[in-house]
Length: 162
Ligand code: SF4
Ligand code: SF4
Image (cartoon, rainbow, N blue to C red; front, side, top):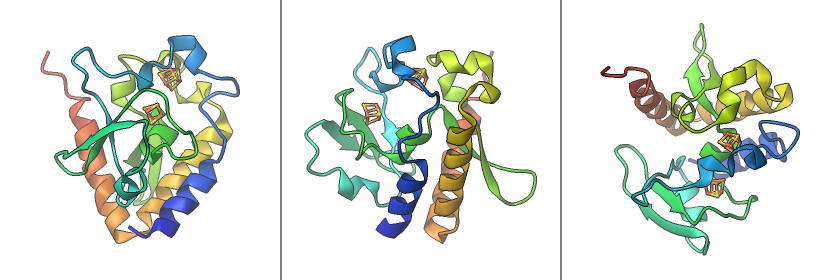
């Protein structure tokens, strides 16, 4: 995906975060911690892996089922963090029409205290910016295909076996 598209998506979110104050203080930045086995990570949008090559806070980038997965040290240069981090705890979803929008990520339930208040509890400017950033990506065919795969994976977390 063209790097300009990523730049535009990043710029749309800018300094906005899920809350007006640092939500990481609520949970010890739970979404930035690896699992007990050292795994856990963020799927990278097309074109992002190349940007992270020289970042010393990136522990490793491993192949994922549909895109590379970045595993970080838990502390990053916020200007370079991937889009998946920038929109969390939101995730892309197709809206009622064909347009993309965002909803709370099912994977956030296990760790994110903001989930309890629903999407309405997040900063509305952040929600709008995340939605617009997703739409910027979706306007690119490779970006749109990536979002479909991302959604497919996220949907799996909405289908518990028990
Ligand atoms: S887990 Fe939720 S509350 Fe904690 S830092 Fe991440 S987005 Fe913020
Ligand atoms: S890149 Fe930054 S925001 Fe993303 S998980 Fe790592 S420390 Fe957290």
